[in-house]
Length: 540
Image 1 (tube, rainbow, N blue to C red):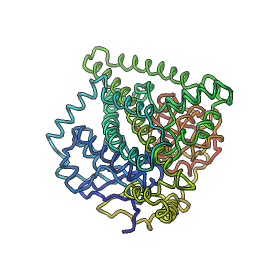
Image 2 (cartoon, rainbow, N blue to C red):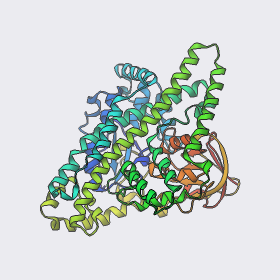
Image 3 (spheres, rainbow, N blue to C red):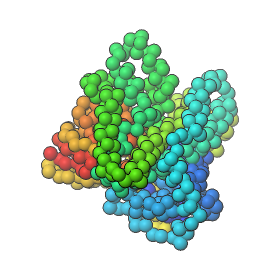
Image 4 (cartoon, rainbow, N blue to C red):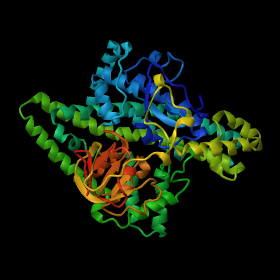
């Protein structure tokens, strides 16, 4: 097999892996150091911990093969184990089909669920039922708040990196892997339970469900948009702007495109990325501010709540269920984004430490991320001895960016070799013509018409004007400021709880996700109609 240097072994017990939701986190090939410093010892171990702490699995089930089956890297790309998620569905009562709908949308290429005798586990089922009770009743998550405070304090207590020795920089970065692991444990728990409330509401008042769970409030990934909006009202270069921008970087500098890979620039390491997003908001009218949009969403949610409760008036059980399910959905949407932010804050500390190491010895500081964690000690001892390795590996890694990874891989059918992947340039899709309707998954209700703007890079938002329809391959929190100007959002991947959906619901923006190949099928500049409730995009 010819794979990539950071690839992980695939599970045979849990054979199906997917890029769904994985591309929300790592849309591009991960850097070698990002994989081995931040992900394998941190994120991936936290992923397994979360599945156990959630009650759906015994640790022995997820260690029996001598590997961590919950997720992995194939040909440099990150995948989530769909089989593990489906077993969670079976044991929770949602079923594999319900999980498929929530996590993968309506993709026609979704591999069918094949039951395994061990998928049914009464003890695990009982634990999951208890967890569901907690999900529907708890009003606080003190561990998550404590980890947020810890991540914030980590940034506040950051040592003077320039004064640390090379060895101390490496030790500092490595010491944070355990904190990444703890925070991702939180993320698995919040993410996997975010769908419980909406699922229950969908069974009682399906036509109102999306409106009932909109406007969660206190969503960390939406926070930068509020701060950027305030900055966009100030004159760039003014004393007040500069002072508040410095505060902005203190609070949100960890964010940026592809922020889960420490190789990528964050707003702290490349502030011009944030400046460009702020400038893109300057032409937006006051009614498009995040606060104004959120206020309108809350009003609509309250109206939907009144309607839902009126329908079940006199039925105490149904009334209580709606109230509990709605409250749970709102809380867990917020907590999901908080757990993600906690992780990103810690990874940014690894980023800046390794950038400092690279700055001292390399023409391009980011090239340090072409090393593996196991090679850092050799690099510290003799930087010149690793220069050829770095240069050769960088060329090979950049080639991965030209490839299109399959959306699903199945270990029982064989993981594709690196040489078998198609080039992105060779992957074509039929361009939709006038009158054509593209179908995806409902994200946020509302119907809007506008000019489609295909954006593949959030660092260049200049083409997007107020009222335009943002068409993107996927989104992460670095895309959130673009939502301010957008009249609607269309995304190629994602489902009920993906980033684009959560943020669109915070801002009341019609949103459709899981529109396969939308950036290739929707012509840039076309006039389109987005129906967020129906999950359709019509070329007008």
